[in-house]
Length: 284
Image (cartoon, rainbow, N blue to C red; front, side, top):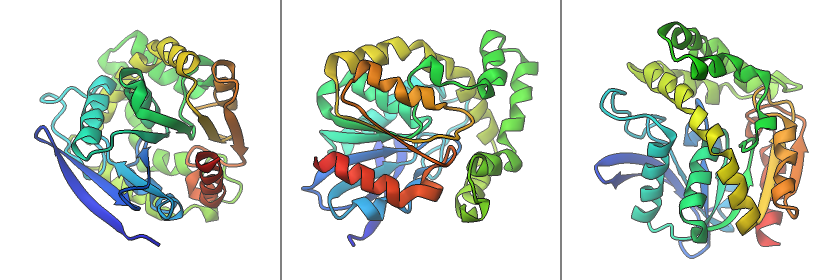
């Protein structure tokens, strides 16, 4: 098994932490995590892919071990996150790559595809949404903040940042919660507990509406470029519904859609199955 390396890249003065494994001359795969996690969510997946692929998994700005400047000095928008990650791929020499997108990683990765479609060789979406029918009623409190960005609506969203809610995100929809390691949600809780982290996340909750506004552009990209596409979906996800996974086939008829009997963080319970699906997909 190829060793894993843990590095930092200087992206125009912004420090981005990332995990890397696999041969430099192998096919490149970029792994983009979601809320409230970091690249550690791929700790079990990377070893199962790195024998065949060159894997890089960065921590997004404001997450994990990447820089988290105060929200009044750095605008936490998905446009800015995608700009940093796009430059990151250039800095480390990731010129053409398949991208694995999960949760927040989806609007990040899809923005990269919009800007440089020639650099994207394939897309794997694990509960990474691009269709309104994929959004559940669990988004209603955040939608209320989009409609009225009042301080009261902002404060109401702090309930989504508690340790209890983080554990719930990991365990909801899982048939045996004892199969979910506490390592992931414990580390997420640590990162969310840092000074200023809640304001960063509340800013991103507010800006998520920009992703929904871009859904038509993402869908046009799918129709125009028809990238090889694999959806591997935790079918019991309380935020992103199975309808969002099936919708990819509307714009990419050749898309492969696989459902797994688990929740939002599908890698916590189904890494071997998802890794096998990715290997089959990328080498076919």
